[in-house]
Image (cartoon, rainbow over all chains, first blue to last red):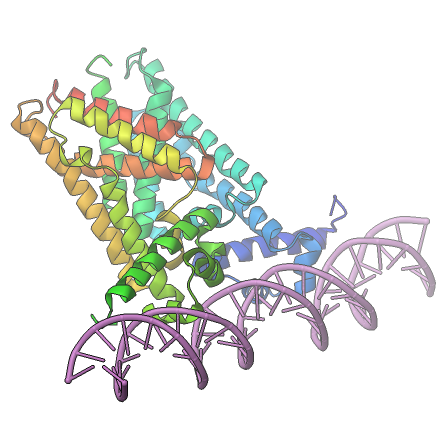
Length: 202
Length: 202
DNA sequence: CTGCGAATGGACCACCTGGTCCATCGTAGG
DNA sequence: CCTACGATGGACCAGGTGGTCCATTCGCAG
């Protein structure tokens, strides 16, 4: 498993990860079984254990890593260029759309609920994801500062953290209730408050 | 099961529900088994199925209902009296403390991740919880308006929804990363922004 | 006291699921 | 070509888990 992977092997491995991700999204981590994954990815049990010797947990971690990357990627290029109010608005739309489309499937949430506390490496993935996500938001805020659209003494980190929390909360409410009202409200309110900070001292 | 419950029966039933809640919190929904619950509640399998004929799912729903009530109760009396900035501040402290103490145990979150989409009645419980929670926040905001601390043209519902999302997000980040930074940031920022609304037009 | 239904005990079962094992096939490099 | 090793197939297994069943005990009303 250390680079001893043929081109064919690599292909199979990613086919499994991506297929597993789809299965997990549809059936939920709790009820998704190795058999489901085998069927979906047209692979055999030996293949599963060949590429993920430690078994299901290892596979789940791989999927988690895969999904974590997806999350940020899906917000590009907007998330990377939050340098004007228009950009923020476009990004908002993308986020809302992405999660509304996703509906009550939770690629990551459920994953970490199940293995988050058990496997140590898993938590690191979420932490890293949150860190990068928040950093992008912070960069956006700083870009607005640089453009003179926001005062320089703004507490960028707290603002970014709070925005991130707003999104997460909106998403988890969407997941459990099926309504995107809160996600929209949280994003709109968050951005509006940011705009307000442009006009008042913090 | 319809009122055919002896006093003893009722006692047993709630002993099971509360014990099960504890087990779920500790072991997580995914890995908690009926045996665990039997041991913890000192009951037999026949009892479990006597009080919850539909089996594990029905029990989980009962626990969900129990936990949902707890959530709001734990925030009282503060959540019910958000009529001054001091009250809001106290409430903030209670929320932060409650969830920091709780750590990465998720009484509700994990529960709904597992049975949320499957059982139809379950989703109703979360929706109802969110509704009541948000309503309390909205009542608090209106109280501030009545006291003249906030302008009358404030969009109370959006503000309340966004605050609720902030909390949920902070909590879920706390659950998956173990850090309460975001919960604190989200609450502080949310309340601060509310205070700002007192000084500027919306 | 007695009888009936609720409450409880605990053996028992069927099934699913993750995981193991070995035999076979494909293929790249010598 | 041939050989060594990765890739694949698929039977098999062991344990755990939810769920069933029946026998027994308990508690209250008549």
